[in-house]
Length: 71
Image (tube, rainbow, N blue to C red; front, side, top):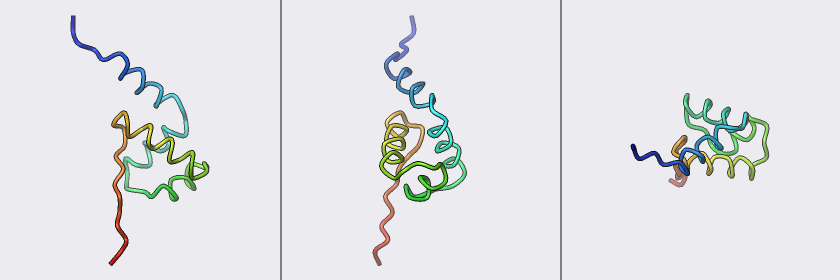
């Protein structure tokens, strides 16, 4: 029997089960966006966008990068 991580797969499928999260994945596959930009593009408020991107990052479907704008 192979070693399938069922809980991990469950989390991945749960992350993919939402149109807005799928839109975030699609957008992030083309270029990097800030959370503010993503929230405007997918029509969600900022806090929900943070929640959704965090969920996607936990299952390795997107990667967040902190951008330091200070000189």
